[in-house]
Every structure is written in C-alpha cells, then in structure tokens.
Image (tube, rainbow, N blue to C red):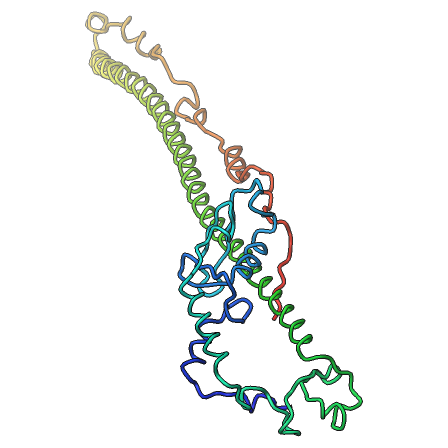
Length: 339
C-alpha cells in the first residue's frame, strides 16, 4: 500500500530545520540534553551513552575504576576520547536545545494539515493507524473491517513503530560499535604490517653482516694459505737453483778436464804422456760428482691441496634457526555486520 504519497514534501524552511535537528542514531529529533562532540556534531545524550557503552562494554558507570573510554562519531568517524565521567563529561549544546524548544512551540501553534498524515489509498478519508502483521504493511481501520485485511492479524501502529524503532536503534548502536572494533583491528593490522617490514629490514641487515663477516674470514684464510704456498714455492725453487749452479760449476770443471785428457791422449811418447796427464783428477772426475740430488716428486705441491667439501655441505645446509611461532593476539571472535 502506497501510504507515502500523501506525505508533505513542500521543502518548507521548517522541514529543512527539522532535518538538521535529527539525531543520526535514533533518527528522531534531539532529546534533552543534547551533547556536542569535539568534532562539533551533536547526539542525544542517551544515544551517545548507548554508542559509548557498546564500544566500551567493560565501562560501567562514573564510579568505575576504569578511567575512561572512546568511541567514534557516527557522522564523521572522528574518535571521541572520554574521561571517567563518560558521556556525562561532554558539554551540552544549549543552543540546539533552545532551537528545538522554539521549533516545537512553532509546530504546536500550526494547525495540522490533512496531508501531513499518511492516508489510506483505498479509503482517502481514513488515516493509516494500524499495522497488518500478516502482510507487514501499515493500513487503516476500514481495510481491517471491510477491506483486503479483514482476515489478517493487526496490531496498533504505534506499538509496532516503537518496537521496530527500538530494534533499529539497537542495530545502529551495534553497527557503530562493530565499526569501532573493526577500525581497531585495522589499526592493529596496519601496525603489524609496519612492524613486519621494519623487522624484515633488520633481519636482512643482520644476515648480510654475517655473510660479509664470513666472506672476510674466508678471504683472510685464502690469503694465508696462498702465502704458505708461495713460501714453499720460493724455498723449493731456491734450492733447485742452488743445485743448478753447483752442477754447472761441476760441468765446467769436467769440460776442462776433458780437454786436458784429450791433449794427453794425443801424446805418442810415453814419457811425455805420463808427464802431461793428471791421472788422479781425471779418474776422480770420471767417477761422477757427489753433489746433492732432489728426491722424486720434489716439485709436487699436492701437500697444499685443501678439501672444501665439508664447507660446501655446511653452506648448503645453512638455514634459519627454528623459532617458536608467534602468538596471535586475536581473540578469534568473528565480527558479523548485517544490514
């Protein structure tokens, strides 16, 4: 049934004023006393207290040991911080209260117009004053007695209105409180995200520092081992060079003896041969020198071979230390938001 067709929609200044005096929680005109929030928005004190109690379930009264609480403005989501007095510590908006009083006096002095009340579409002279529970629509008494709702269950319109209005207000309070809790969780998650990024960067820096230290240690050890190989190389080559010099000297001596022996061998006379030939030196030289020799495999450097297999396995096995799983600071409560 279209009962809104008869509602006055002339956009008069009084109606515009009335819209500015509607509480965003109960959707009714502000009731005394009106409190003004730090964001300059207004709420009924009862509505503000309902929202505050929903957002702070453990806050009991002004005598509680809890120092205060907080909730968010339903109009702009600005966070409102309260002291131990709760909503009773908020300032009253006397200006809005005076405007409401003047508005109500003005409304009471105006005569009621027929179009200001929803009228029945079927019975144009009948106001909609009852609620059909069966069809879930407002209707008039004539429709119940003679019309389409004569076999339906009906209830007083005002009682249904108050019941549904109360239920709607409770739902609004729960939604506002739920939004506050969701916003708190979002803030916690954002803080956790930032902490995770900061901790990750710190872990990366520590890991790089450890690997740089390990690389420096390996470089130092490599330099030490290379120096030992170079020292061994220098010792062996110096010894071999000394032997080469000795053998060269012996070769020169032997060559001179060979020349002397050849000259002696060319002598035909026995007396002359025996006078020229130095038999002892030649015989001694022909037996070979007694110089020192190097052992077989002296030039090998296999003793300086280093096995890095165990280090390679250790590097491949490098991993992070097993740490206990972080505790989750969520109570596991699932928030359900319904419209």
